[in-house]
Amino acid sequence: MTEKIITKKEVEYVAKLAKLEFNEEEKEEFTSQLNSILDYFKKLDELDTEKVEPTAYVISMPNLLNEDKVKPSLPWEEVLSNGKYIKKGYFKVPKIM
Image (cartoon, rainbow, N blue to C red; front, side, top):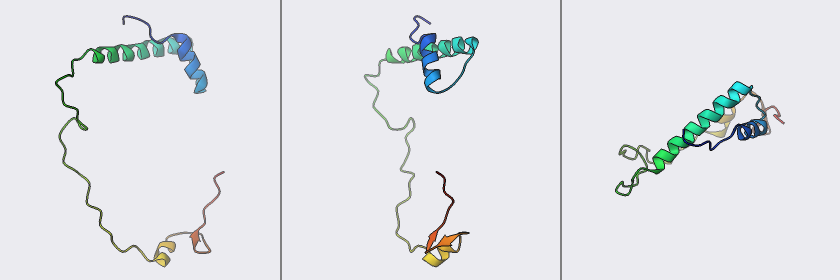
C-alpha cells in the first residue's frame, strides 16, 4: 500500500452514519482493506484501454429476452379466489406502517 487514502477517523465516521460499532482492531482492519481496494483501483486506472472496444457484457451474448406477447389474463374472479381476505373486489392486507 503506497498511501493511506482512507483514515481510521473516516471509517469511524461512516460506521457512525451506518449505526455500526467496531472495536479498534476491526477499525484498523477495515481501514486497511478499504485502502487496499482503492490501491487496486489506482492500478486499474493505469491500464491502457485505448484500443479496447467498449462492451456491455464481458462475453458476447445474444438477446436472451423473449418477445413480449399479449395474452388474455385471468378473469378477475379467479384472481380474487387466490386471496384469503377480499373487500369490495380488492385484496385486503394487513397494515405495515
